[in-house]
Length: 471
Image 1 (cartoon, rainbow, N blue to C red):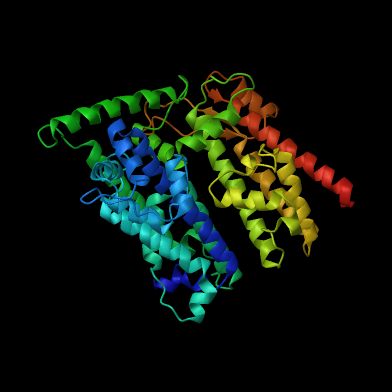
Image 2 (cartoon, rainbow, N blue to C red):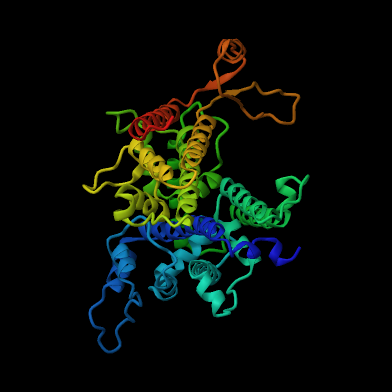
């Protein structure tokens, strides 16, 4: 399959470029998380040396080479230890290659040991450089095409990098967006399923996932005695024990089956500690700041739902911007829409948008602003209805209970997948609710948050309809 069959031939579409930038930002957030976690876990002397290197005085003769970071927003984010920042700043890649050797060594080990990426530090930086160049290509596409500049990377390179960095949940979304834009471009092969129409892209993602799995197995099965110096081995054992304790504390006693340590760490690192803390604050019952929040039944599904709704908002905003409406202008669209667009663009959540006073806006206000914006555009009622319907479907899909069937000792599949119960009619109550054969997980923390969002969406629709007279 030729390179054009992946997605290069779709880049003339501004909507496609916007979608690719969305996934590139998610990959960039993960790369920033990798560094942030390494820095936070380093010994105090290494953190201190790095901090001094970031903001050095004028170097004396023979002194350590000063930090190469000239980008002020990036420098400020690093100095103040922000939990996420724009990893595609050119200075970030330069910094990774020139920072004190102790931090470089720790980052190189973490890439392979903690994240099980089949890369050394040099190739990690090269991947960051290539993704940054591709982002710049998309950002300045018309200008670069007009100048007849050469495309800086191939589709295969971009797909491989995204396959290594993004979670499988996002692989499926990206394949779906490529399929959508190919259909819009009139390239749909009728009668062929989506997976077949994007077989090469899916194959690249599958190979990347398999390579990471192989690196995981190799790492977990490696004998360290005699091959690693004693100090590093002891440190690795201490870190491993802390991770095992943290892993156990993330699941309620009844959560089984659960992720093994590596699969959990992969998701934990991708989300990032800062975002996980925000998710937990949403999920905990009011007034119970110390309540344990289950990772599989609450944190991860709320994270996935938040990204799904982020993507729905992103697609709607991209379509509106394509009509010539300036969604980044507060004068044209008010305060909420530019803030919402920026929050999503920088890796945040739609429910964490700040108002002019710095306070977090209610979800109903965000939904109301989105609907009001769409009603201003051509065919506004249909656009609004499509957005509301899509959001409702995503939330209903997430708000499900799980019925775990009993294990069959004669079945090779000793842990059969749970049955998703979307409604609790009489039949399901008898079949699952009143049966001792099924173990129920109603995911109450998740359900409470999603139900609140569904009410916010419904109330915002009623409110805006009463204002503009839309039925």
